[in-house]
Each structure stands twice: as C-alpha cells, then as structure tokens.
Image (cartoon, rainbow, N blue to C red; front, side):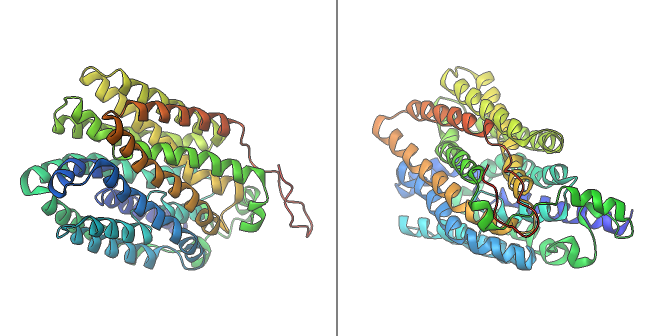
Length: 422
C-alpha cells in the first residue's frame, strides 16, 4: 500500500480509538450513574443535569481557542493533554463528597475539549486529511463512538453492580487514558501537507489527480467570510435546536426507561443497541454524504429522532424499548456525520478548526441548557412526558430549517474576498 494513501487511514484509525475511549468518560454511559449517584449524594435530577451543562458551557468557552490551535498545530498534543486531564477528573469523581466538587470536575472535563460533545478534536483532523473520501473517512473515525458505546454501556453497568459507582469511575479513567494517549502521541499529525502529501493520499506526482482534488477545494472560506453568509446562521440555528433537544434527552432517556419498570441491565443492553445503531448509521451516512446533499441526511436524522421519541411515549414492552433506542441511535449516527461533514463541505478545510471553534459555543450552550431544564420539568411534575413532547417539536423545527439550508454561493473571484451572501 502506498505510503501517502496509507497514512491518512492511520490517522482515521487512531481517531477511531480516541472516539472509542471517549465513550468511557461519562458521555452516553453517564445515564447509568444518574440513579446511584443521586441516591448516594442526595442530588436532584435537575442538579445532575447541570453536570452536563457545566461540561458543555466549558467546552463552548474553550472551543474557539481549541479550533485555532487545531488549525495551527494539529491534534497530537491537544488530544494527549485532554485525555490525561479527563482521566484525572474521573479519578477525582471517586472521592467527591459535595455537589460543587461534582460540577467543578465536569466543567474541567468540558474545558479541555475531549469529553464534551461536538467532536472538534477528532473530526477536524479527519476533514483536513480527506476531501473526495471525506464522508467515508469521517464515518470510519466516528464509528469509534458507536463501538465504544456498545462496549462501555454494559461494562459500566456491570462495574457499578460489582464495585460501585466510585470504583467504576476509576476503572474507566485508567482504560480511557491507556487507549488514547500513546496512539495520539505516536501517530497523529496536523494535515497531509506537513508530510509532503495531498488529501486522500493523492501522490504529488499525479497532477491531474491533484486538480480533481482542487475542484472541491476552490473556495476556502475564512471565519470572517463564513460569518457573513446566511447559511452560517441557519446552521447555527439548526445545531442549536438539535443541541437543546439532545441535551434534554441525553441523561434522562435511560432513567426514564428504568422508571418505566424495565430492568437496568436490560436497559443497558438496549442502549448498547442504541450505540450499535449509531455506529452502523455513521458508516452508512458517511458514504451517503459523499454522494447526496448533506441536508437530506440531516433531515432523515431529524425524522428518526421524532419517531424514536414517539415510541417512548407509547412504550409498553421491551419491543418499544429496543425499537426506540435503536432508531434513536441510527439518528445520532447520521447526525454525527452531518455535524462533522457539513462545515468542511460548505466552507472548506483550511480554516475549519477556527470556524468549528466559533460554532461550538452556540451548540454546546443549547445542549447544556437542555439537560437541567428537562430535569427540572421532571422534578416539578414527576413525569418526563412533557419533556418528550417538547423535544419532538424542537426536532420538527430543526427539520424545517435544515431542508432549506443549502451551501453558500461561491466567493467572488479575482481578489474580491467578500462573500456573496446566499
């Protein structure tokens, strides 16, 4: 296998493992900690929701800086430092006694950018290494999240049953750091040009191939230029709506099913199926966005979320449990690819980290607001059903926004860098 082609996929494989390990850090599997930690520490659902809020708000604060650092220096040191810091915070969770300690540790995890949702540190490098095969490469790397969810959901529940929630945080911290740091330091690089290579592994001695790559690279938007397009703000609205809805369901879907009378282990298996669906659809969506407009994949994701939540409202047996979680996972998988792909597809890869860093605060703030608001609605009425109806409306509105959000018009040629607002 040619070295130029091979090394791009080494980057993808490494980021697959980083994403895999991220699922041990209290993302999808955090829902399993809600009941034991709330019972042990005396925290309400609304307060526990603030843990995700602080993590996301902190991630929003640091997103712009991390994006610029990715553009300038790449992910190598950033991911290693982020993994070590996240691991240290997870060890800190073993010893917490007060609520403020809980929020402080989650805010630090968000600040360093690896465990906060959004995938900035793991998706931007892939988009810089690939153009023609960007969707497929993002799908391969993103599958690590789904596979990690499949692995860590049941493992987390077993560990909680055997060693308690404190011991579980310690074990998961060791696992995540071990899987992430050595690979990041040894294998990750900023972009192919730093190694004398072209995107997609195109050899430099084949100029006609390089021209074909350049055809998708004609318009490299700066952050300032992107901000002056209506498309940029429509995407902000779309991801803001999705973020609020995702935050509202993130940690509350799992305890909802348990309180519906389902065995916690069965629920953990269902959420492993959720993660499996995400992994499968991430792979499928990666191929689809290389061939069809990305907004159609985003629309399908919204419709999937609406159906999955509708199934939660009428759930009466295990069929509904698994059907809802699998469909939700499929929708998450599609949305993960959309989130990683659309910014590079619409605005190019040169300033992608900076652009994503500007976007991240808006999406994380809305996602962070969703978790505690959903918790307080539950605390006030003793039911999650009003929350699910709100989420259905949010996903429906997001669907209307994204189907009307096309790529911005190309920049004006010959020195006039002022974009033509779409």
